[in-house]
Image (cartoon, rainbow, N blue to C red; front, side, top):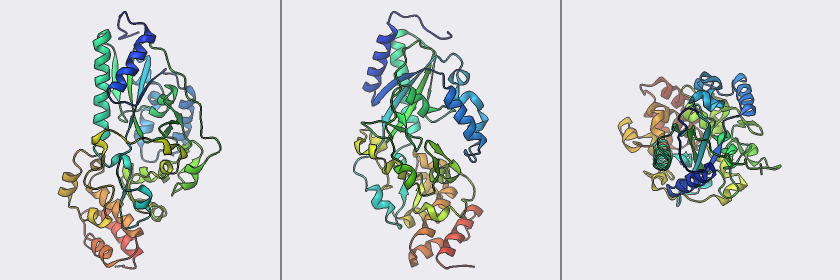
Length: 358
């Protein structure tokens, strides 16, 4: 096997060491998966054929590489999957924000710094520890940055089970965590997948504002608020706008209602703590940010990736869903002639919701 180093450590002992090193580096859990995912591949292809990936063309562009790690990174024999908690402590209660239509709700994973670099750097540190022990080995780190079926791999690695909302769940930690992977050529023993503990519960399906969870374990991204506010770059379908409420970046409803999340633990990572009061901020305040303020305040944040115009688009929809007030109408009118046609369209819709036309 390409890149498989020669060393004296027993594979089972090495696997235990890798998990211990992962925890020393701050991961809450580390597991090891094989690379065969035939059932996941079938489901992926069916999902793509149904068009449920929306405008995420990259989901289809990579074809079977997403379900075949050894095709994505030749020489891959095992995948080391790691979990890192992100639930921020001492934030305004999510339901309180969602029930206050003048406030902006931002998915809790995005309140602090962008997780991509932090998780990937930590995975590289884990790879460095392995290298110190056995010498150079074939590997590549990923965290939501390539065609990787991270939930499926984490499930195979024994880190939890796929919930009906399609996120990974763990009995002692719920679902408030990030996942990252090290594709490796190491001949390590694989872990046993976790049993599913969703039972007859369908709280996540029932609460979804846009009914994007079209069946247990199946999400239609075209209706998902996380997709609409982050991945979708164009006009948000008019019929879905009223259902979005005040959710301007992502949506946590399916996680907030999940019974298993009562066991979730707050993160110790200060990078994931809220910045600029984003856990408790008025829609108007964010809508009034100039592009310079947007870039400055959200430097190092995952939110900055969507750009200022898309940010204003999302907030305009939320303002259209908020109770009518002079302040909201004034804020919207100030953006009627915005250079972006996308912003102008959604501002006009929002003003129309408050009875202001023309």
